[in-house]
Image (cartoon, rainbow over all chains, first blue to last red; front, side, top):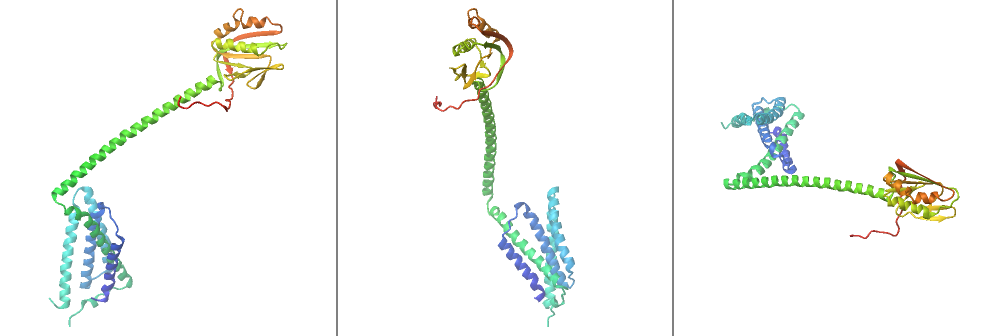
Length: 117
Length: 238
């Protein structure tokens, strides 16, 4: 792994430690929102990793995608709650499918780059 | 030699690198938080069997019923307190009315009503406290509810004392001409005083005394300032 991934991994570690130390409590009502937002964030992160492996990484796209997807996901869950339609299922499926695709691609790209494929 | 794809990556500025690191930190934070909260939430319920869950629901229902009962009890209590407060207010009103009545009886308030007025001029100074006392007695016997002499209210503690050339009552000097006012039934008071062989006749027969009595539709009596009691005290519990 190159020096390029040092800072993001460091950030991830800091976030995890912060979460463990601060022990923020979220009202159980908001747990579904946080969950779907987290899924969207993970999707963005893996999308970013894939793009960087493909050499197509665009930082502005990544950042806007991260925040946009996260907020939109939470919003969709909220709308679904209001309408009585389990819209979060759509979000879960959409982000989930993309997440697996990205993971598969990342795996392939790493295999290729290492010459294992 | 294997190609390292990582050295191809270009993140133009340090700022972007830091931003991405911050985003990673956010993801980490969200991850941990969600793990913790969700875990705490579901672990408890997930591990329980259907019977246990049913038990929990039953217990919650019992709790809800108890809370409902508590709400009803509180409502009843609040209603009771409100009624009690209203009762207390009624008692206070009653006490205030009683106090007012007692103040009137005691002569501590200015009062008005039907009655009579007696004017006595005593040029020679021959009237004494007994004559005045007799008039007061007569008026009281005729049902006078309040009496004053020269704007001094006659109250329960009032005493007439003979002094050189004047009479003292309520610590004040009273002298001719005497204006005696009384509240009560004007007709009865009038007749009590003017009875043949009564006070009027007795005083009229004296030299140098003019005696005039009139029925009044509105007599105003002054109030006496409540005195300070130094020796007397009620006995508790009676």
